[in-house]
Each structure stands twice: as structure tokens, then as C-alpha cells.
Image 1 (cartoon, rainbow, N blue to C red):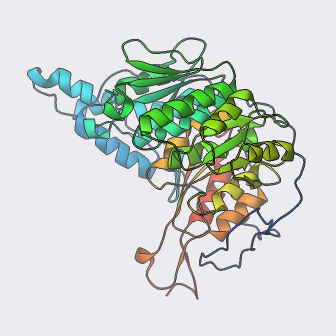
Image 2: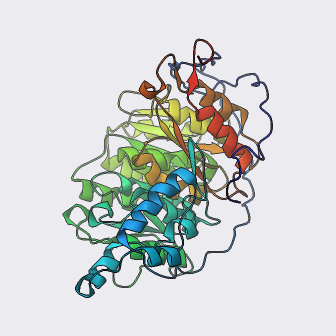
Image 3: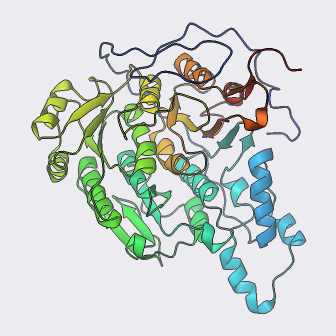
Length: 465
């Protein structure tokens, strides 16, 4: 992105809002806004799920970082980058930062991430008033960028105790592993592939420098499924012979680390990632484990895990085309109270979970003053590794878009419904912030600009004085 270019340079002129599409299982909207938003319906017929989108082409993984920068300069880089969408180069930082004393040089380098990490790992590649993009061209780069955004690692207090490593070919494992981002473990996700550790993951590991603790069982890394284990880290593995088996193994590890069972269980479709991905953000925020089911069959590892969590409330995510009503009845026969949270398509499905409120389950985001994460519905691994953003900072649900250039109507109407407003004093208002995941091939700057406009604080009750 060229420097000093207006945010709306490529954005099309605003058009009248289309007829609202009503999301499923919504709570009443509470936000102040200029236009009245629709109230969601109480029920609707269960639809047939859309065909699986073709995976998008991914870009080349960036080259290794060149050096280590001074402590003060890195802090400034992260703060300025979050506002202006830029990062400093390692050469410039090393020229300006004072060299540490010889006796402390090793310690300072170990406590400071690379100055170019934010820029080379895609955080942030482009930012506006109300949005920040983690713009890597592949999941490993996006995962590293998210991890450094949540854990800047300028000091030891800003580092995670451990990290979670998932394989690039196992999106189900990544969704289930998001539960380890919940307190007390708080381990961000990083990506490995083909039996090795890619450059972005190595760079992030060097900067994050996890040391383990009693909360992680002494582990510095949790290695999930087929993920590769980096050398030199004390690792705990969670494995299984199937996606359902890996998820059940992760749930058992979660219970051990958290010191007890969860409050709820989420069942996601193992063959429909576009409907499953919102579960990762909820798992990271709540600590509720995610299990998997086929469209018409409940896998044996999931049955065993549900029996171990007998009587816990179960929430099935996705329409009946993704997980059938027969599976829901089978879960109920195991003794677990069960409810379905779903939408007609992946976009509305993510909005349904964002709106959902059932006691202490569900985001219940039906008013302004929240964070959001937007990712592509056909990029499940990108969406899963973004889960730490939903459990830190401006905590908020994952929403999905199904097109690079056009904001879906349902998503536009939902963001309009929760658009923040004020009457007299904007400094006392609530604000929204949206993280955008992926490069412009995934979500174009035009769509980001529209999201920014929908998240912008608006005056209500007349023109500006």
C-alpha cells in the first residue's frame, strides 16, 4: 500500500442500504443509530448448506527476519503501526536505538522481538480508524502476526507462557486447539507444515520465547495432531486418529490444565469448515471445548467425550445440512441438553453465534461497544489462528465474509445494527473495532473501507454543531 494514500482512495461511493436480511436466533438490538435495524426472527426452516468453496491461492511465505532491534524502538513501532498501518525497518531501528551495555546485550536481545516482525508478518499491513488488518498471504504468516499482536513480547510480562502448534493441513485441529487460548493457559496458535517449521513460525517463536509455567503443566508448546515440534522446546502432544479424536484428546488436555470440566460443549461440523470456524473464537473466549460431528453420524471419540461430560449443555453449530437433526437427537439420548445455533449460510451462521444469548453461553453482541474479527469463510485455518484476537484486546466474535470485494448484505446489516452512536459527547460513547484477517486477495481494501465506515462512531439526533 503506497504511503500517504487516503483510506477511501479506491472505495466506491456509498450506496443506499439494501433490504435487511434477518439473522437467526438474534437478540433485540440496542444500538443507537440513524436507521432502524431489523429484529431477528425466532425461527426459520433449516436450509441446505452451500457447496464447499474452492480454496484460494496463497502467496509466498516471507523471508527470514534480518536482525534484532532495541527495546524502546520496538515498542514505538508496535504503537505507531497499530494506528498508521506501518512498521519500521530493522536497519533504521538498529541505527536509532542505543546499544545495550556489553554485559546486558544477550539479555536485551532475548527480551526484544525483531523490529521488522510486525511488518514482515503482516501486522498490520493496513489500518484505518476502526479496523486493523493482519495481512499475511498464508496461515503461518497470519498466525504469527496475530500472536505478536496479542503478545508484543517487548518485555517478559508481554509473552505467552506457551504456544500451540497446529499443522497447516488440519483446520479441525486448529479450531479445537483454540480452547488453549482461554485462561489460564492463554497459548496463541502457530502453524507448521510438511513436518517442518516455516520461517514466520520460527520468527514468532524467537520473539515470543515461551518459558512454560505451572498453568501450562511446564510445557512451552502444545503440539496438536500432525504438527511438527520445534527443537529446544518442552512440548506436550495431543493426538488422535481422526479430527474427532484430536478434538477429544484436546478436551481431555484442557480439563487437566484448567483443573476441571467446562461449562458447555460445542459440536461443530467436521466436513463443513465454513460453518465450523466461528466455534474457534468462542472456544478461545470461553474455554468451552469443540467436538466434531459428521452430517449424519456422531463419531465414536465424540460420543465418548460427551459421556465423560454427561449432563453438560451442548450447542450444535450449523444448519441441519451440516449436522442433521438425527445427530441432535442422538446427543440428547446421551443425557446432554442440546440446542442448535445456526444460520442459512456461513455468513448468517457466524452472525447467529455472535448474537446468541442463552444464560452464560453466547456472545450476545447485539449492541455497540465491541471488537469483531472478520475472515473469509473459505479460509478455515486463517479464521482459526485468529482466535486469540477474540480473547484479548477488544474481545469479540468471528464474523465471516464470502467474497473478496463485496461485503455480504447480512454482514452489512448486522454491523449497521451494532453501529455506535452518540448524542452530545463522542468521548463518552462506545466504540467498535474490527480485525480483518488476510491479504487483499482474501478481503479487498474496498471491503475493509466499508467495514470501517460501518464501525465508525456516528452522531445521532441532528447534524454536527
